[in-house]
Image (cartoon, rainbow over all chains, first blue to last red; front, side, top):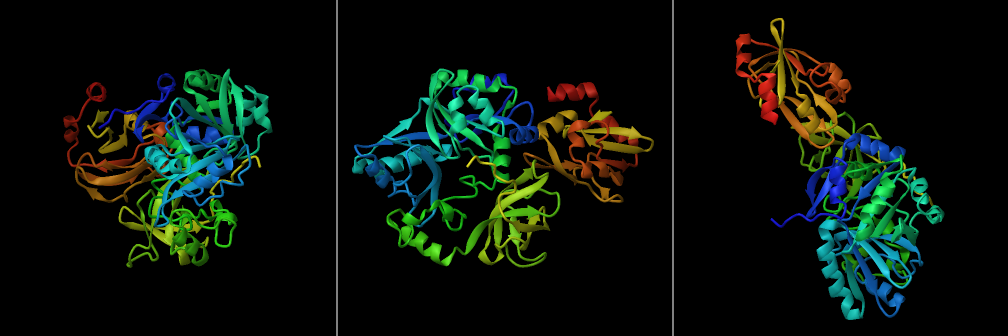
Length: 375
Length: 119
């Protein structure tokens, strides 16, 4: 096995009492001294600091920004042209079968596009971008000398504004270049917890100083991958490789909102992305099986892989849980999974098989915890 | 108090053996969010899976450390699984076993031996 990579904050994690685990080729903190439950609750109550430097950062440039945006549109079913300068949006890489190869964030930073992709997919994504965009004259710059942090929670604005008041004026999905702790940072008002907050790309030589400056604020606690997972699950957000994979389509994954009208049938730039035929047809007909929120009735968590049945006894599995566990803010088990379209309306009753017993679980509307973005 | 290699503790209370998990085990599990206990009256054999315990991280089974009959279970930890993290070697016992011969406990580790075992 290859040696695990480390982020620029590795020593800081250890000094904070982190328990480190292998994740997507990196040694990452799964929890700190507080533990998963308290870290989760702290993030929803005050502010949480996350090192997400394992994620991939990519810059796309070309002679003409509009041309770069249109070139990227050949790989994603998302409207990139028309994304305003200083704005960011969620995107998906699709394949010829209409499946999802990765999800990503796309930011228009004026003379270039800045992408953030998942750690486990980043090599493949960079290869996909190079193969797809370089022939169109786009330069694909894979950034390996910057760390990436997230600062999330109701106190995030107050904490970051103490370092630079300019961030307080940003709205959800705004992006800006901001000086923080003496470093030129690329900040977006976004995150993956359902809370208000920021993601911050920082030069690696300034990473420790900025992390320490943020952690010095009394509202901030470091949060590991364990609580990051329960936070995003309660917020109804997908984890690539679990809730989305190359066999799930955007429609099945409940991500229709990510495909703007311009890219749909009859749109100004309809189709023209991998799997367009399948995806546009599915937008019209619906998918046979779709991602939904699932609330187990009892206290037993239903985790990834639990099979779902329509009846308490007999019959074949009709669906499967793709993310599940305990939601600290909900105070009980929460899950997401795929169910047949006819069972997708909230209130539908299914049964999840846990340790040989079929336990009741109900479809509910996502998210479990109201998102509190600053629109 | 005696200790098993599966990180359970056993304590004699009259003619019964009280069983729980050690503070070390509770810490390793992380925040406990779900406990499923057996029905009182169940006869168990050593290494039977008798308790399911789920933390924020994963599900684990607790095995019967010895043969016996479950005569009492601690419903308080079903109601409030967090007690397992708060007081694992006290209030958060799991079940009480009736055994034929209490001398089977002699085979288990002392506290000093257990501390050495977990390093």
